[in-house]
Structure formats: C-alpha cells, structure tokens
Length: 211
Image (cartoon, rainbow, N blue to C red; front, side):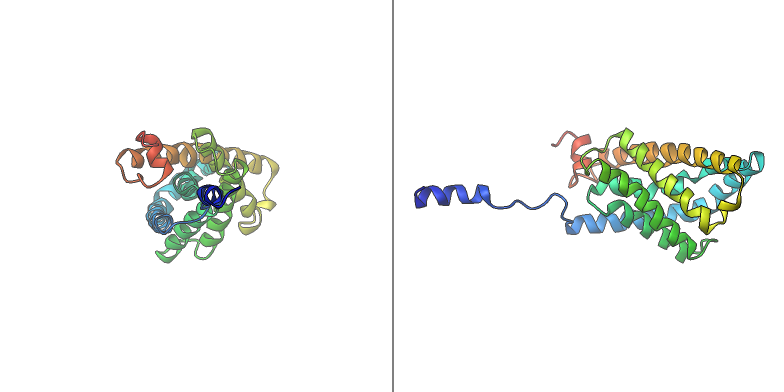
C-alpha cells in the first residue's frame, strides 16, 4: 500500500467514539429528568400512597397496583439517554430528591431507587441498549417492579407475609410497572420528543423523522 493510499484510508480505520460514551448533554438531561421525577415522587408519596393503602385494604397485596409511578425514573432515563447507567442514575437521583424533600420512608427511599433503577437497567442491558420500543419499556417497568418486590422482602419485612399476599403483590406490582412506568414512560418520551426538546437524542430524532 502506498503512503497516499494509507493516508486516505487512515480516518476510516480510526476508532469511532462509542455510542455508549456519555456526553455533557446526556449528563445534564439525566440530571434534569432525575429532579423532575423526584418532584413527581413527592406528589406520589401522598396521592400514590393513599391509593396503595386503599387497594391494600380491599385485598392485601393489591396495593402494588399503585407502585408504577415510583418506578418511572429508570424507564425514562433508559428510553431517553440510551446509555449504560442512565436508568440507574435517573431513578436513584429521583429517589434522593424525594428523600431530601421529606419522603416518609427517609433513607429507605434511596435504597429503593437504587434497586429499582438496577431492575430497569438490566432489561435495557438485555437488549444491548439497542431496542427502545413500548414492549421493552414495559419490560423495564416490570424489571424495576420485580427488583422492588425482592428488596421489600427484606427492607419492609414482606418475607414474613403469606404466599398469597406475596403472589398478589408481585402480580400487582408487575402490572403497575408495565403500565404506569413502562407504557406511560414510553408515551411521555414520545410526547417530549414531539416538542423538539429531545432533538439531540436518538429518541427525539426518531419521533420527528430526523434520523
């Protein structure tokens, strides 16, 4: 190969920036999402917990139908940022904001945020951060719900509850995670994208036909 040919082909053989590398805009938007979702959690700590208590009084374990909103941070982070760690980062930051603003569960809120974020993160990892349709979003919500259910076996002492309660609670949490975190999170992502706010992200360009 001549020197001229080598020079022409060199740029093509250089390593391209990894699509998994976080940009400054990724960090900024993830932080904004985390704070915004944390404020949503503050509202849901009252309204959602009232719904949780009412459903649990109706059928023990059925209160899990209200938990989905507490899981939405991880789903939104994964759908919008599409980078490893995004689901975990947004859900954990949202939980931290909720705790700092007076969550009735104090530091346990952060523990829950970490585990719930990991649950969603594992689903996005399973699809190698390449698929972000409504089905994957619903699965991420379920993954977060199952992770929360496992944590509460020990953190909330649910391991001492009967099998019927645990089964109903797991099913209710999973449905809520799929719908309130997964489907609603996917719809919110598309709504944000339609405004042009996410044009610097693949999630926004896809919806607006820019890529």
